[in-house]
Image 1 (cartoon, rainbow, N blue to C red):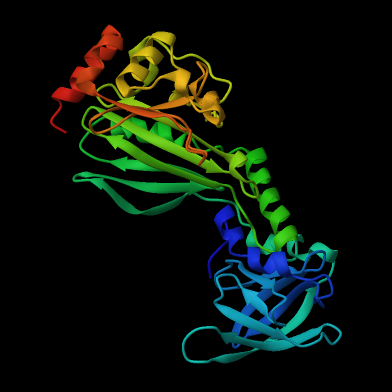
Image 2: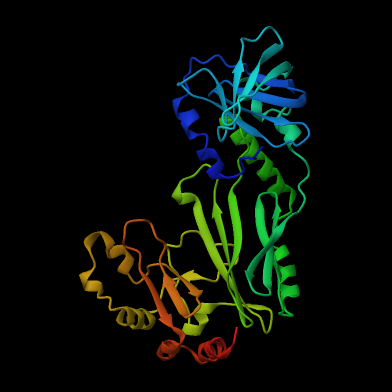
Amino acid sequence: MKVFRTLGGLFLLAPFLASATGTVEVPKGVWEGTLDTKAIVACFNAEYPSGSYFYKQYRKAIALGRSEKDSFWHEGGETGLWALGPGKGTTLTGTWKNVKGTPVTLPIQLNLSDATGGDKACASDGYAGLLEAPPKIETGKKEEFAAGRSFRRLRFAGQETIELSGPEPTLAAINRELRRDFDTSKDTIKEYFDKRREFLGRVGVPAEDENTADPSYWTSQWLSIRNYTWTAGTGRAGISWFYRTWDLQTGKQVDLWTWFASRQPSPNAPGPGPIATSGGSMTPKLRRFLFRHAGIDPSKAEENCEFNYRQDAYYDLTLEAKGMRFAQPDFGNGCAIEIEVPYADLGPVLTPAGKAAVRRIVESPN
């Protein structure tokens, strides 16, 4: 009974959508009835054969897709198969059977409840409207980052942030700041439901952007959080991320690039976050230092990788256990540059403020 809320969920439908044929008889519309003895609501799109259903008790959409291999409607994740007979007026009957384990067959009895959605029935008020409710903040389970430090994921209308728990007294203020990440405006909530309906009408299931937030570095002195987004229905071009870092002594955000004078603006950022403080291009002095440290000679760059060696190339700057890392986005072509410098070796390129900050990292026991 999984909700297909992310792009990854749509990939589970790909085998059905890619092979479905336009000649399939589709009982388009919204149907209500029972699967065995449990009340359900189902929808079927005819523009491209797809659909889903949910138990009224749970209201979580389960995908239904067709395959040219057989005449069944396959549940997303191959949890069950629907065999439906031809519709008789406003009545539809069939059977559900499981795919794994001991064979079980259950009756399906449905009646047409809404035909106003046309070929995109799953996006209609009669179906999508039943899945929609005023969004509330959902709190996830406690996850341990390290001994004595944990966090919980908070979600609201497809957005995600985290709530931190640890010994640092400034975390309370940071948690309040993180809660303000949520955009609770009417326009944002409408956009959230509109996107879900768009995908319901296209592929039969509601999809959301994949948004995650995770602590990437956390000691008694500093905290970094990585926010990641993959826009539903897009390829790699829809992926973006940003890092934020806080000084846990003051509870204030810091820009790590100021430890090296400043960053240079880069036109090649993968997608800036609302308050991104992690990415940019290196100053000429910093670039020369890092390339010498890593033994990189830009003049010997392979032709297909020359873009990565340009002065305006984009890098994320992050705190790591043993040093600071400058890393380019990895596009899978083997060209990405990643350089990590031990904290003790950074002195020649650090500002006075940067030297003081790095000293705190090195001297802090945890």
